[in-house]
Amino acid sequence: MDKRRMMCVVPQPQAGCHAYARVSMSSSTGGTCLRKRRHGTGQKPQVTVSCHPFAELRASSEPKAKDLLVGRASPLARECRAGTHDLRRAGPSYPFAPFQMTGHGVWSLVLACVFLLGAGVNSIGTLNSQPRAAGLQDPFYLPEDPSYTILDSAKDSVRFTVERTLVEYKGHLSSKSSFVDKDGNIMGWHDFGNLEGPGWAANAVGGAYELYAFGRHNKDAALQEKALSVLDHVLEGGFINYETGFITGYRETTTDQFCLNYQHKNNWFCPGSMAKIAYQLLVFSDLLDGPRKAKMQSVAVKTADWIDRNVKPTLNGWYPRRCQPDGQHYPQNAYGDRDILFEKSADGLFIIQLNAALTQHGLADYRQAVREKVQVFVDRSGIFGSINHDTYDEHENVAYSVAFRTLREVAKLLSDEKVRAFAYDKCLAGLGQFKMTDDRHGVATKGLLYMEKSWDTAYLWENAEAALAYFEAYQDTDHDQYKQNGLTILRAIAKHHQRDTGFLTEGVDWNNHVGKQHHFNGAEYGDIQYTEPFLNDLHIVEPTLRAVQLRIAD
Image 1 (cartoon, rainbow, N blue to C red):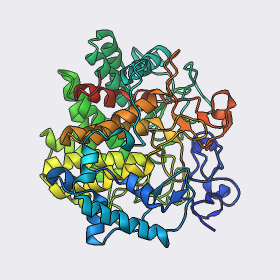
Image 2 (cartoon, rainbow, N blue to C red):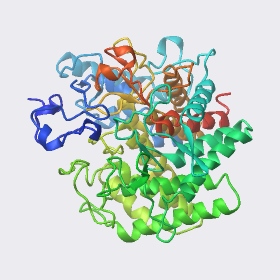
Image 3 (cartoon, rainbow, N blue to C red):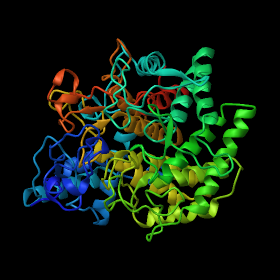
């Protein structure tokens, strides 16, 4: 039996059910589907993976770092010349059925390689770097909708968050909930529902940064003040230990108690996610002056130091996915069973990202630590296990985006072209495997990335992160395909905005993974009727403003 397709019968889950299902993984094994994420449902098999050579050609058609530097041939042409192209290499090819390449299929690919080599090594690179002819249009590409642009979409996200989710709390603004419906009603049945704060699911610092940046762009002083009020809630609300730098992620809104994780418990936290909060404070501080700036930078320095002193590496040299409150390893998953990604989660990238940024700012010197951890990452051909705290897959799309963005900065810091090449060739190119080039089951999915093979819903905060990665690549290389990829993703996201309230779904459940009871109007396939205001609804703001900065959107 193919374990990839029958996830509900394997003893160790390759994808875990979300705590919101409120079932333990051990009791689920063999009886209940383990891929229940946010809503306690889901029984669909994962996306079919095909060995079709042209599916792989589509996924790897973007240039590698070497090509960008010297204008060489496409990856496929180079591999054909060197005899290293792996005919078995797979890529997503829905809706095509999988088949094994034999006979005519192999010879077709060989002839294609000969044609590419005979036609000249620059032909594919030219197609990638220049707008394509009408008959050669990238199947992933979406044009702009002039009646509803990506800036219109970003404005609606801001409007929804401000009008329907912000509340006063002890003199500052905070989010009423980290999980709401289209009218801003709190979904208290969900583990995120009665939580707020700077932690992964609640993302108060990230949300405040997005609001402030948008207000700054629009010269909207009132919006900037609201953003600063959310920030001050985090800075002054008891989440931060200013002596040690330790950051507590959540406040339970029904009891006013603090907790370390999305399960409302204090038995574990994710050090990578704590580093991400510190990194957000550091990046936000770049837009500010005065006491706030100094306080935010001081917290970032102390948080990095706490992690450096207290969080020990795993046996493979990487960062642990979860730790106990004192930094000791917590090798279990969120449900207390053995975590299959304990030493394979890309959440650890946020620690490298923080250390690199502090070094770039001249606030600390983590060059050696950064160099060592990046070497661990590269030696293992990348560590792309789930960043989301509630999923368990070794290849998650947002992990590839975060890896590219982090290694891009590390390459600059260390002046290391090998790291830069890995960022482009492995991390950014890896996003191609998640692309959807058609609308599936009557749902607008063209131009989106699905989350992972074991859980194929297209979650939109992760898509926004991918758009940001593509724009950063375009900023460095001026390569048109990266620009088009980023714009396409934001345009595809905009199709799922509800213009009456500005609500943006957390995910496009085109394959009914979470269950139709959680879709609008009970549709079999469609948009999930909830969102995370700061984590999801606002995350499109940063890549949208980056597109404006790059003068590719207005």
